[in-house]
Image 1 (cartoon, rainbow, N blue to C red):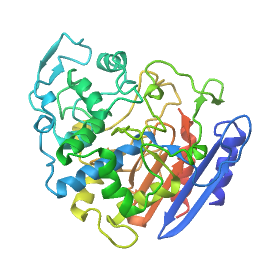
Image 2: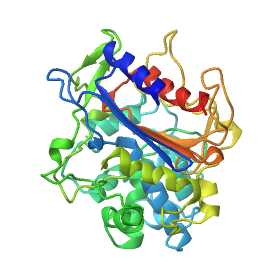
Image 3: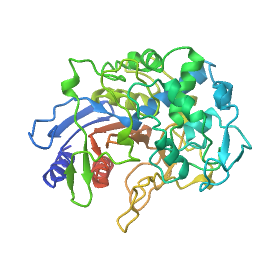
Image 4: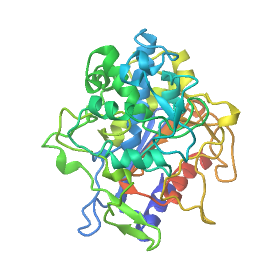
Length: 396
């Protein structure tokens, strides 16, 4: 832990990070630290169990909820999405990735629940470098802080897919579609489903799609790392950045599938630790071992590897690294398949995910270890996460 703290202090001193909080649970020994500041100017101390926008770390929770419902026969992995949302019955795909909306063809196969979890269903993200992503942005998909999940998914159903389902791995809004399907099959709000099936059994009392007024002061502000100036700045609200997505603190009716949750390091550590055996601290099973194995083992054919996430702003210069090199994808998580030159220490089978503002988690069944890192930095320097990760596994 001392090494981790020293590394974070170096990143703070160099202006790459304002502050961070992390928890490591190794064989039920908890190491919890926070360092640095909540802000850039006033230097207010960052305290443990602050609140964070966890962005895409919402996705594994939604995926887990879907797998629970599959166990209860609400859903099947091979259900096509139009079985549950009829708006998708006439779905088409672009004739090629370069095509415009007027150049579409019929699908050979409809996308399935499994492909939503795999990110192979054919959807994209507003920030990606393709024509359909630009259309998502032009239609302000997910920008609203007040629209319902149903309304947003209805807008998506009016647009074609980027590619034939199952033919590519492409990180996307597919988990938002999955969250809406969960609402349809349960006849309930996704927030209620998460609360009943995950948050209450795990005592994740500080995780939700909103923050109450008494706790709002514990929410960290978000900053951006400027790689040209090599320092943190206030956010630049450029078009085609996901920071334009709605992420309100005080709308109790708000919900999404791909982002939207607020959480704390302590809360998310409970989720990450549960993923090792599927049980809460009292031994109550939240999911069976077979479902868990499906989620945390690679599910992609070798033709779909390697996986990589890029955006319209990605600069593949000489320093560029694909931080998913060596990873496959299960049903909701990245999964380490083999070590690489940039990941020499991680154990094969380590899995987890991360968030847009530099939140990150991993679970490692082999070593009975989980770790959660919380920051609020867009385009964070990748060495921060890499140092955190390497310090854990180098010193086991």
